[in-house]
Image 1 (cartoon, rainbow, N blue to C red):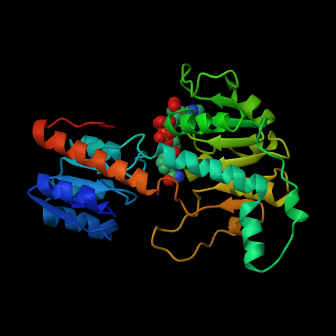
Image 2 (image 1 turned 180 degrees about the vertical axis):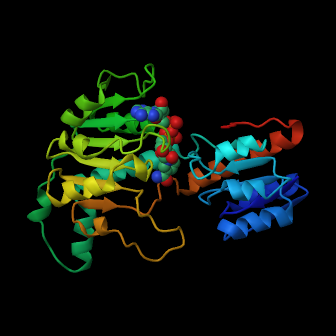
Image 3 (image 1 turned 60 degrees about the horizontal axis):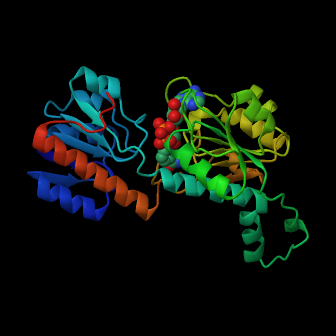
Amino acid sequence: MKILIADKFEAAGLQELERLADEVSCEPELKDDALAQRLAEFAATVLIVRSTQVTADAISRCAHLELIIRAGAGFDTIDTAAAAERGVRVANCPGKNSVAVAELVLGLMLSVDRRIPDNVADLRAHKWNKKEYSKARGLKGRTLGIIGAGRIGSEVARRALAFDMKVLYYDVLPDACPAEHPDCRRAEIDTILANSDFITLHVPGSGDTHHLINEAALAKMKPEAALINTSRAGVVDQAALERALRAGRIRAAALDVYADEPPADAKTFAGTIADLPNLYGTHHIGASTEQAQLAVAEEVVRIAREFKASGKVLNCVN
Ligand code: NAD
């Protein structure tokens, strides 16, 4: 088994893979054509990626490739259909970073409500503005709308309930239930839009979720409500969101993912949405805690070990 890792990978996991495989090459900078070339040249049987795109072209150029492991939950960066056509299996690591993303969502909610980033920025500039920052609404008793009640949505629900918030959720799966709790109720999307103080999105980036939150959906939100998106950029019509924020149509938005997101190693962010004072943006760091990365690396090793031992692909998505 020859493993090519085309992304950053946790050191303890790398050591385990080195014990398991005949050869492991960790080349975090590989992408695009260089990835396709290196895959073929190294004759990799297993490819491990985190955010690196894996195209149909890259897959077709490596005759030895049998398995692609996505070191994370979402797999919309991999052409799974092209992989299936060539008999290459794709596996992911679901649920391993759910808590990390949920913790970020709670952080963003508190950031919006108490305007913590603005407080900090002003204090760093030696400004004191107690009057301005004493206008928070508080979270207790407020309604959090969760769209997509899967792994991350459920972790968010549990944490919001611990803050004594009321949770309204919607999921396409009729029996999805993020938490058995009297303050956690299922509702239609329109009810969620009209009644929530915060709306957080936890649906996949593929399928029918493209621009799920568009101009019309934003218009249904309460003016004092805020939108949080840590799922995938395409779920929100970012141009419409920017217009709503500029017009003060909704209170704020908190984003971890962007339509115009720069590559992971970029040093600047050009998007004009960053200019808005009611946008609380993080740098696509939802899954990036030490705990989550360790858990993902352990899962990657488990998938590779099972594949070597039995040929079985755990968490196969294609
Ligand atoms: P999951 O598969 O466990 O849950 C997704 C849920 O969405 C499922 O219950 C599914 O039934 C539901 N769903 C699908 N289409 C829907 C629709 N149209 N309307 C309502 N519900 C719908 O996935 P997860 O692990 O909770 O991940 C959720 C999202 O978070 C994904 O987009 C993933 O890529 C993203 N994510 C982001 C980061 C980050 O760094 N910001 C990290 C991990 C995951």
